[in-house]
Length: 393
Ligand code: ATP
Ligand code: MG
Image (cartoon, protein in one colour):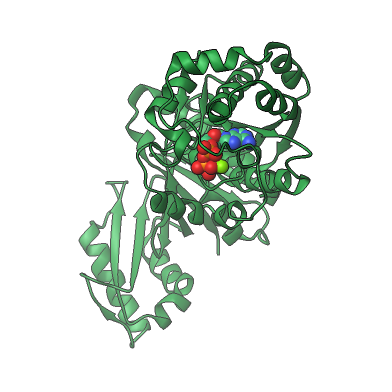
């Protein structure tokens, strides 16, 4: 029996004039993500993309698992293709949904007539098909309010489609439809979630991570790379920049007052990140900060950090509780990696008594005690790029 996957757009269906460019990007993203699984035929009509595998042995469950992580998709249906003829719809429904209907106690039929020329009206389709199901599966009964299975018949322009319900998509907007931003990715719980949330709004993500060997280990870097790999399932291929940060941190420790270490480190990270953002043509930076979470995430600290930033800094977690952030990190499967114990450069150089509400002038004076300009240029030069591919996620 011929099967097709119907992909229904979400919010972008409402974007009027822009709809076509959103649709083009979504189409491109879907093709790119499914490429490793085989060859597919694609078409689109009425805010739906139709995907058919050219090879019958292609595992459609695997296709659906990938599609569930593609932003811009509201719902996915795996359906059987029928002629626009009631007898064919009935015959195929009974066969295609046999196992589902055999095991269920209750069902209802829903009909959607996008083609208003189809000779039967929706209530008639529901009644006739419902009757045929009851006859073929005597154990099952009709329940229109709370059915275990909903048989959906969609009469569209060239064919009719039958399936047993929609699978929820990832929602949001297609990645790439909102430009590119650079994520400051640490090994913690928060920054991967921040990247996920911006990608969900259509932002194409690149990532930057700061390492301070030998104070930080290879194992700590590997952990961040694993996080990046996981994120690629949602974000698509990710350019990952690893910045050597040791000299800067040593200079900080040598010359600057200890209570300002963290805030200065954050400012220096921002200065370097902005140089990398320029190379990547990224328009903004993203961090995983949330107000009041730790000493360096007070509003005053953020004012001091942002004072060195010429581009916008997005902090999508700003108003979220840790428990809410953890919930998302579990959903996107980064939590277990994030809680591995390896130390990053922040934890290694944590001051004993950090300034919790730093004042910008004092921070600027503290920073002037170090000679950072050449070191920043050197760190940017020494940055290494790796690409994490969605296909390996
Ligand atoms: P996370 O859980 O993301 O590590 P956190 O609660 O530990 O965040 P901080 O250590 O204060 O918070 O870091 C705040 C933000 O600064 C991080 O969310 C991340 O965006 C960025 N950041 C911190 N350390 C690094 C690093 N080594 N490389 C890149 N970005 C970093
Ligand atoms: Mg951290």
